[in-house]
Length: 141
Image 1 (cartoon, rainbow, N blue to C red):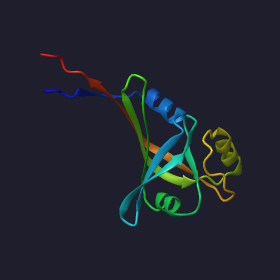
Image 2 (tube, one colour):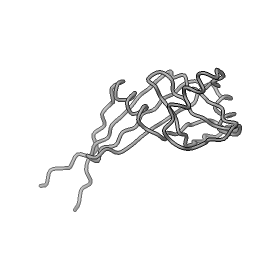
Image 3 (cartoon, rainbow, N blue to C red):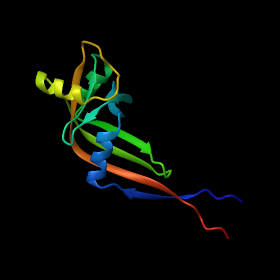
């Protein structure tokens, strides 16, 4: 009978979490919309302090600003087959400063959303956590 590998869960260091946030091009923002959870893919930027993403007027923007907290997540699979995930929870706010908007736009590497009516949303983190999952092969008996 074939056995599936057991999994080993490791907590990521704060430095590893920041690195994954900085290098991942696409993340997901989780909001509450009309009392229900909703998750949207976004092309974010993270410079070690500011986590932000551009969006236009609509559900994502209004839901992010209309609730006390949002969730944000990036994940990936490394060459060795292990997977990782970083989760940020915090408060969303509009970036109004034009200089800050330009700075964030210059940090973008993903080509999504180039509309003229973009609004930048910053997530002020209250908590950043990360995990790595590795498969551990069972010994053959």
